[in-house]
Image (cartoon, rainbow, N blue to C red; front, side, top):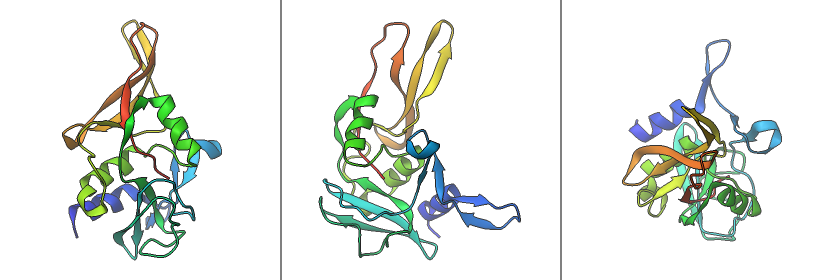
Length: 187
């Protein structure tokens, strides 16, 4: 079993009360639907080129699509556990602007696990330049509180390695400007 598949199954599995392993059907986030969204492939046709990443029969598979093509057909059937991610990053924007751009396309920012797993498999999945810049990798902003500084920050991945992660400044009370970062939308 490849390192990437082990990582995906580990991150997507949860222990049921009976102790059996099952695939998690929802991901906690501060997006819509009371903080929960389904991590299943949905029938849609995103406007920009994208890749579907899913798990079918215990194997990670993917489908590459041009913008406007529907998610139907291919290796990732509608309803399979997985996500859709844009193949190319977008121009750096503030976190709130990036989130709004994704929402306008009926998508969201990728979660940290989706971002890192996609980065580790970028060549195989047809994803472009996942380590050239920091990219927003969270729909959730965490409270930052240290000394006299308070604010919000969100996760960033990339910049030279799929293992590099940091926090981007969403807003602070010390006058420091919010961070801009590249991003790609997911669903």
